[in-house]
Length: 227
Image (cartoon, rainbow, N blue to C red; front, top):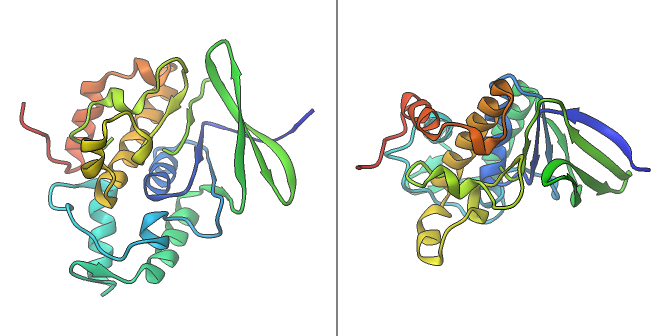
C-alpha cells in the first residue's frame, strides 16, 4: 500500500508557467497546496526556455505583479528578460505563500474513484508516495486565459480536475495565442480562484459559477473581452 505523504486542498502537478501561478495564488487564497515539479526549478517556459515577454497590457493580478517586478528590478529590457533572475523571485513567492514543493518528482498515476479524482501517485528518488485531497477538496492539476471560456479548463469525464496552460481544451489555431506566458499566468490564477470557490462552496470545479469567476478576475485588473 502506498504511503500518504500529504492530505491537501490542491495538488498542482507541474510547476510550469501556469503551475507556479496556480500554486502561489491558491495558497494566497488560504488553501493548502502541494506542487509537484519534475525539475529542480519552477517556471517552465519562463525559466527554462524563452527570454522574451508580450501581451501583458490587458492583464492584472499575478501576471501584472510578475511583469511589474521584472521592470522594477531591471530584469526586463523590453521585450527581453534574464530568466535566471526570475528563479529567486519564484522561490520567494513559494516560500512566502507556504506552498510545499516536491522537486525532481513525477506524477505517475491518478487516484480515481467513481469518476472523481481524489489524489495522485508521486515518484522520486525518495520512493513512491500518494498526495490526496482533503474533504471537501479539489485536485488541481497543472493548474484560462481570461478571454477563454471556463469550460476549457474542465476535462470531460472526470471531476475534481482543473487544467491550465497549453493542455486546456482548444484547437491548434487558438493554441497559438493562449500558450504564451502572460496568458498561462492568467490561467493559473483563474484556476486558483476556481479551486477556492470549489473548496469553500463544497462543490466540484464544474459547479463553480463562471460569472463569479469572471467578475473576480475583472476585479483584479484583467480586462474583459467584448461580448
